[in-house]
Every structure is written in structure tokens, then in C-alpha cells.
Image (cartoon, one colour):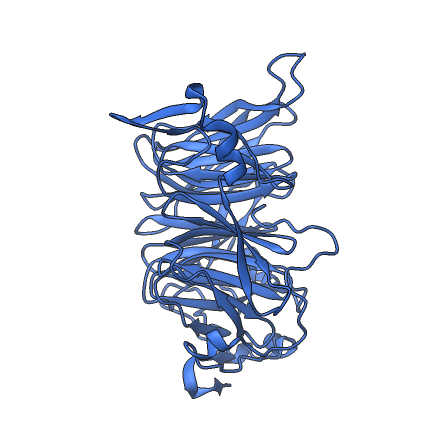
Length: 428
């Protein structure tokens, strides 16, 4: 997912220390979670298979400290940003996974977070996007530097009646405002895209934070947005994923506007909760409320998409999905994470199941760490915890090849466990 874009040579934070802020000291005990990833591949003898035939997973780390359920995650270099329904945002520093700092208290429930260079953008339930920046006085302190729409944008538009849109009876707002919760954010080609429960998709310019467009995108709430290769995909509760691209409506116009390129149809009247796209832009996958995963293939350079995969993935709604190469991870309201491998023609083969969370899985992020032959998977849940898992690509390959002759397959993960709180580190 192209949810995290960084400006060149401008890291989010510049600290090499793992000391946390005084604010974090007041709320969360600082427990070290250091683990040696080089040892992961050699500890697989502690794995046991579940009755389903898949390997049972244990987390590398279980991180707690959020006031409410974890609603979104973002990866930025050596840092992990997690936000919650409890209005707080925590910055975790790797590899210790210590609390580096926290910010955002009292600014409304956080629904989405992305990092762009030295700035962090957060989307909130109150319909605002807030912009944070590392304080010059203290690198452990984030300060609020702006709110979207900006005051400059307001002042430039509030005097003109044509800039107002009606959201409900006897109530109008400026078209640059969201009328409901902002549920998702994506950054692409110097633009920020915000999707909202008000059914609109808005486009903001990163350089000056100006709102460029407001698109009446769907017939119901927008739940997810992702962008790749100039195409923006929005997923909605109306059961559709729509693809948008920038085009000049008229030759004399200087500014390119977004227009509808295609519609990827899901199940009728069943909400699509999340959407991801492969790095090459060829494959699009959506997580559906009826527990299905659906996949589409983009046909060449033509603006058309073909349904290639429709798989019953979970017993309950799929709430989030993420991609790492040919691997797809799906988080569900059934408290499990499915690990899938994309095979020929976009078909999905199930190669693992992760259990351990005590609540529905709300968000997932995968990180290519180049450690052994695997990747790190981060999961946030309504149980208020953030968990870190290691998934072995090599084991997945061998498992999928052997599954052609047997119905079950397995994946390996480290049996190393780092538990949260004052218990310290437990190593098997």
C-alpha cells in the first residue's frame, strides 16, 4: 500500500537514542523488546502445528499502552506509529520497540495516519486532518502545526456562496470540509487523498496543504483508499472499489482533475472495508464484510480490471489487508490474520493463520526487513495491543509446493516471544 511516502533525505525523527519522553514515562512502563532477528530462522523447532494443519504463531512482541483500541499503523524508517480510538498516537522505536514518544491527546479519535518526511498527517473522527511536526526544541516532542482545511483555505472561500455544499437539511459547509469522519488517508505524487464517511474523496497538495478537489465518489461511506502509478482506488460500503486518475477536463485548463477510470464491483450491498494494490499496479485486492477476499487484475495499459479471485477467507468480516510482494495478509473481526500467497492468474492460496489477538484485527502493516527470508508483520487490534510477527517466505514456498500433494500447508515463525509490561523478556 502506498500509504507511506517519505521525502528524500528527511527522516521523520533523527534520534539514535531509545530514551522516551517524560509524557510517555507517565503512562507506559519502558520495557525493552530487543530481539535478535538473525536467530529467528534457527528457533523453528519450537513450532507446533494447529489442528487445521497450519503452524501456530507466536508474536515477537506484544506492545500495549494505548488508551483505546488500535485503529491504524504507519511505518517510517526505524519508527512505528500507532494510533487509537483513545485519541493518542504512540511512536515506537526499533529494534527495542520502546515508547519513543506519544502525542495527540484530546484531538479526536484517530482513524488514519501517514508520514511524509518530517511531518505526520492524522485523520480524525471530527472530520479534520491534523499536521504534526517534530519540535525543534525537543526531538521527542511532536507539535501541531496545522489543521486541514487550513485557515488560509477558509478565508479564500467562505465569502463566496458557490463554495458551499448542502450536507443535510438547512445545513451547508464549504466544499473543502469533510462533513463526517475521515476514515482513510493515502499519499501519492505530492498529493494527499482523504476518504470520508460523507462519501467524498478529497485531494490535498502536500506542499501548501491546499484542498484541490472534492469528489463525490461513492453512494456510501468510504472505508479505504490507496494509490499506485497515478491511479487512486477508493473502497466503499456501497460494495464498490472505484479507480480514479488525473486528467485535464479541457485543453485550456492548467490543473489536472480526477475522473473515474473504472469500477471494480464487489458483492452487492456488502461493504468493502479495505483495499490494497501491488507495487506494479497490476493486482488489486479488497477485504469484504462477508469474510471474502476479492482480487482484480488490471489489463495491460487499458483502464479495465478483471475479477480473478473470490475467496472465502474468514468466518467474519475482513477489516484490513496488506501486501508484501506476492504475500497478502488479511485481518478479520474473527480475531485472526490470514496469510495468503498470490499464485498464477492472481489466485490466492492460504498458507498460514495467525491467532493471538483478543479482539478484531483493525490494521496491518508489513515491512521488508531483509532478515533471513521473511518479513515483519505488525497488527493492531481492538484489544488495544500492537503485535509484531515474523513470517518466513522460505517456509511458505516449501509449504505451498508441498500442498499440491496434500491439503494442508504450514509457515514458520520464530518461537521467540517478547512480552509487554514489567515481566520483561521471555525467550524460548
